[in-house]
Image (tube, rainbow, N blue to C red; front, side):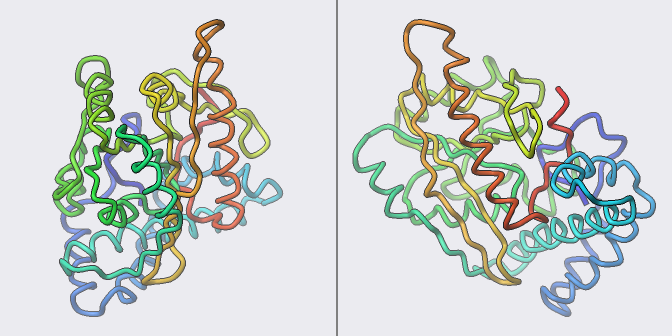
Length: 303
């Protein structure tokens, strides 16, 4: 079930096609959200049996989150993980099909975030993760009255791009490509100076430099670019965590705010390690409560 604009280019094939999205759209129109969820059980079973690369990409996380599991149990965890991710992809498709607000989204930390904007004219870096439905979560930020810029690559799968509107965000959401000069850092700095929000994915390095950070009992590689930019721009990092609580409800949490800084002396990048570690600690707490909403599908424990 792994799709999305941040897909790893090393995968053997792209998942998700126009026919599959059409079927899910028909299920949504005819039987509603729960009918589409029901269809997922068969689709995810197919992936579990026939797409071994999908299963193997989930195992690095499963082996560390459920270390005492045997082979059959690990496959069961992978199946539940596929279903969980599938439901959140269906949610996004349903929101597009219905063209209205389907979900009750509770935003924790709204007052805290607004206080940040009132204290400073500078923007903030919104650190997102492959945990929960960050796309749905971004819609809850409309009430902030701030433009949000997403640092993201172009979706390579046309079916995903068209069906889920990846890269076609409208309203107060814009795209910054990391494939431009200097990885888009110059544009990011300009946007932050204007007081806007820049969303950066914080749990996959995509070839960028990373630190070895304690995560689920082992050293994992976490990128530090978001924290380096925040330190240079002297702006805070707001960690966005989105959890699906029920079929029609999400909780979005923005209460965790970090303010990284570097001293002029010493190795500047290494001074950021405590903040990256704190971010990893926050993710660990999240997956203790929502073990099947971690969609890394990548071995971050290997560089």
